[in-house]
Length: 117
Image (cartoon, rainbow, N blue to C red):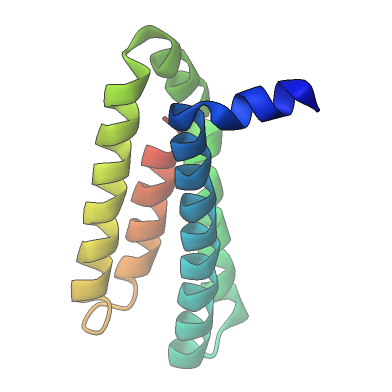
């Protein structure tokens, strides 16, 4: 318990922890909303299941490369760059979602791609 209290006193760790919690809640909420919206628009369970495929593919393809990059490059800059890229991806999804519903597959893929780093 003493080690945990020391860890909580580290402000940088707490910021990183809060950032990760917010990121996970956002990702899961976004995935859920995209699934619901796609199913409402298409009525197809196959079309909605491709959202999970779009999310899993970058983990399989880019995951090992992202792990190496996170060891090689400056972690703080890489985290800021990937979070900014994810935010831009979500902003584009919000802009184009109504007109191009299938853009959500690309957005989920790109978001997951950056998430691997």
